[in-house]
Length: 67
Image (cartoon, rainbow, N blue to C red):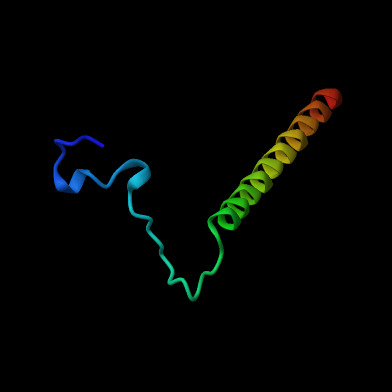
């Protein structure tokens, strides 16, 4: 933290306040649980994209063989 920073600029980096969009009584997940869920969604999206690329590649090879 820069000691000469303005008051609004001091809450940055690791010391910044955490923003929660849901009240704690509604969302009782821990940070690790939320992170794991986020990574699972990202992994699923990667798998879908990989599958689509493989499918399109196979389709292209089939078309080339037919012509």
